[in-house]
Image (cartoon, rainbow, N blue to C red):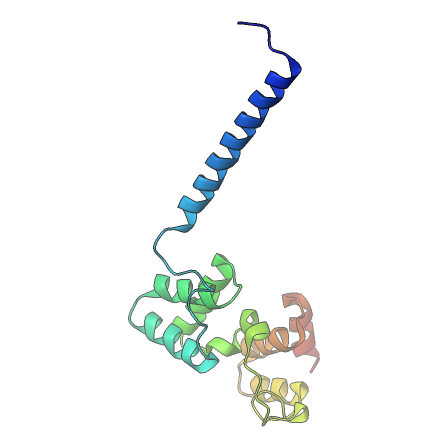
Length: 160
């Protein structure tokens, strides 16, 4: 190999760096072109439309597609979206799930004192659920509205 001076070494190093950058750019571009629309490529549906879409897909037995739509239109992870889809499949309301609390649509017609379902404050709604024998749903309600962990929510429901 002939002796290379500092200028030749710099040029060789520059050529290698350009080639590596080009290969990285091409690889990154080929990963994103799977043909599926990206979340920003499709407008997010209205909250009621998302509920209808997820409910319809789970009732048709297309739970994977429902999970995919939940992930596409929210920032839920795979396990979280699956938990929501399982709850919808079991007959629960999507917006009632604690994981969907941060995405829950805001209803300007509901005053803060009336609560999300218009039945009063959180404590009175928890009491009503407990009286109906739905303590587990009361725990989910508390977790969804307060952000409490499971244990804290259970203690809260038991204390009321």
